[in-house]
Image (tube, rainbow, N blue to C red; front, side):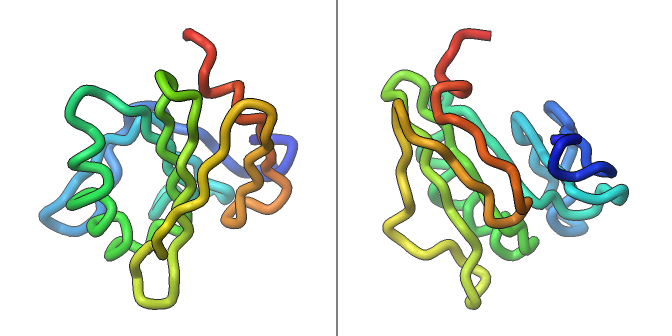
Length: 123
């Protein structure tokens, strides 16, 4: 992150205030500037119940909070689904999907590019 955004930071499992009544705790929240207001990019890993919540209420909450980009990692399928915020504060569907051998380029953090495989390796 520091290579593309000198003042940027990556927070793991941090509280992200979406509204005065809604807080999310994504796996990773990336900020390209020194302020940690709304993340520029959120990365969430699939868990047992995450599919339903992520693509439903969480996606809507992130859109209302104006989070520009979401990456949803399903390591069991070696797939990263990328959602980019549209003009109507929603993420256009169908989303882009990236797998082994492909590179993800962030539109929210210029210069940030990662091979999809980095998300599929065990921690």
